Image (cartoon, rainbow, N blue to C red):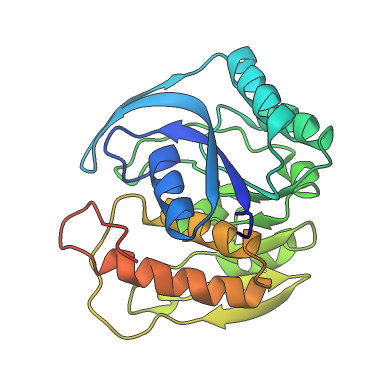
Amino acid sequence: MKKRAEILTIAGFDPSGGAGILADIKTFEKHRCLGLAVQTANTIQTAESFVSVNWIEEEIILQQLQELLKFHNPTYVKIGLLPSLTFLRKIIDQLKEKGLPKIIWDPVLSSSTGFDFEQNLNGIEDLLKDIYLLTPNWNEIQQILAGDPIESAKELSKYCHIYLKGGHREDEKGKDLLFRNGKMTSYNARPGMYYSKHGSGCVLSSALAANLANGYPLNKGILRAKRYIEHFLNSSPSELGYHLR
């Protein structure tokens, strides 16, 4: 039997299961990958509200990561909710000791219900040099680099690949855009009935990570991830979706 690809998520815990490490693991498993997780925070939230974030001690997070890396060799690491860019650098440095698997960073700067995590993004360009793929949405790219979102994504793609998540809207912001060294590729959603979902950004980034871990090239991985998120958005009319594929 072919050994399953291992993927590690480093992210927060969402009790609703719509976002964070629970959503990541559900997505990895549906793609026949072995999902590993390091928890960075406990949150008090639902699909409809966000009350607070309670950070896990940084030393505990690093110990979790160190122990996992003794016995597992993930080829891709998806990173979500973190307390700071300074701590992200510590995680990257620890991963480098393992040979630095490819990192997909889905920056969580605010919750879908409007809670602001107040991240200090100074010096982000230096971090991006060690990132394979950054997956912000349109609001997040403007927080990372002020100005026109597309021009900001082009500028940041000098450091790493940028996948600008558009969601399934019927306007320009409904497109997903990939930027590599300043060049842009557009991906449109297939026509269909799509419902808003809590954690859809997490699920899309995780599906992309899983497809890449399974050996698909970036363009094909994006297309497969988009088909997965379309099924997810169509799975129910509620804010919480089902991983049915």
